[in-house]
Length: 250
Ligand code: BMP
Image (cartoon, rainbow, N blue to C red):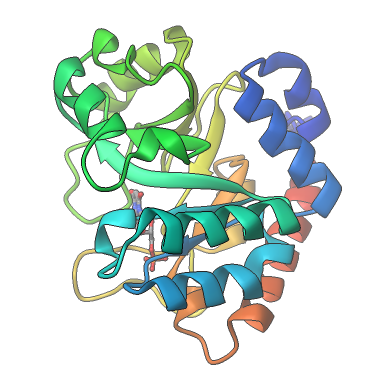
């Protein structure tokens, strides 16, 4: 018989990072494995999107450095309120990729002061194990493999990156287009129900593919939701598609 994926409840037993636990609890509670990628460029659009999709998501993924009018009070405070109101986490997709000392500065200083508000961040592991030591007070999701055409994350890279992710106490998950060990939560972007890709190298798969083939834990959807006419309705569709695909894979 084919081996079945393990459930969110079973993952809760083996993933002991507090942020991983929180995400798994929210997933079970909201019956959702959807993360919306809020790649919008103004505070108003960000807050409008968060208000619409909030009830349906486990986390909102941000690229805070694309917000033109970013303001710690005007942007972060209301976003935090929405995260509390709708019970989702804030995932800053910063993809840190430098030596530890520089990342520590990028994490806590500058305009965005990510360490003040993000529940978890993404980081490349290109600079090695110790470069991840600085993310003490949040969780880290390591970039193990990328969705774009021609990415350098071949199987040797992914294997080495996965070793770092598994062994580092700050890391509880990975972003990848490939299966990862059960001890890591798997986050899969490059998900779209209508498109196969864009004209800038992005490649898309369906939620079904992500759950059946990769046994992913969370799907990340950007343009499929925020570019659609009704973002709330689209989020609900992806949430249902993701949850059905998860249940079918159990
Ligand atoms: P979209 O669904 O609109 O293609 O957006 C995908 C989002 O996921 C973007 O924010 C992108 O930065 C991110 N992402 C990705 O597409 N592929 C990866 O391999 C890693 C990512 O973080």
